Amino acid sequence: MQRRSLLKAAVTAAAITAFQSSAAYAENPVLKIGFVGVTSGPAAA
Image 1 (tube, rainbow, N blue to C red):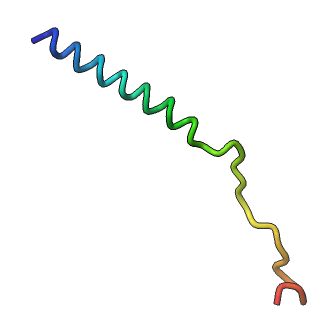
Image 2 (cartoon, rainbow, N blue to C red; image 1 turned 180 degrees about the horizontal axis):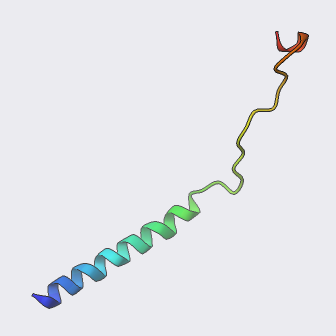
């Protein structure tokens, strides 16, 4: 019984580690947040 729970814990830890490392490669290299544009005056109309 103890061996089975140790095996489950090891497999779970390996799966979490693999998921975290693969998720890092899916991110964009540059994250841009915001809006640049004219919000007032004749050009905004």
